[in-house]
Length: 151
Image (cartoon, rainbow, N blue to C red; front, side, top):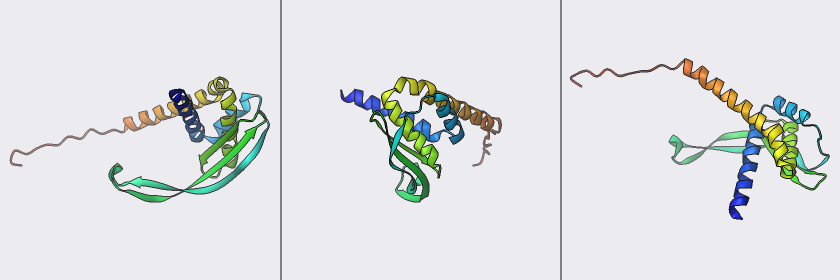
């Protein structure tokens, strides 16, 4: 039973990561195309705040505070009782609320939400990443070092 809960939590985290990373305009389009949007009650927010971003020297050294980042968050309850939470970087309160509603709805209809919202957003992100990788690869320069005999 523990592995089932862990797998469910992992899938929810993955979906929330994809929703938070999605461009607001694209997320709004996918949400509008979804059709039925359940009535919901705001539990918290949407509101904006700050979080401390931490880094590590050399990637694995001592942690240090890098700076603060603006974050928007919202928590909602849909009419069927599920509670959803949404967080995203920036000051986009509407995006945070949409993420929270999608999170709550996904707890009820995971298959449909994944098929109509999550997977298309994930595919868009993968295509964008591939395009960036191709653009960077086109500018790649291979360096080699010449060694002198007396060094």
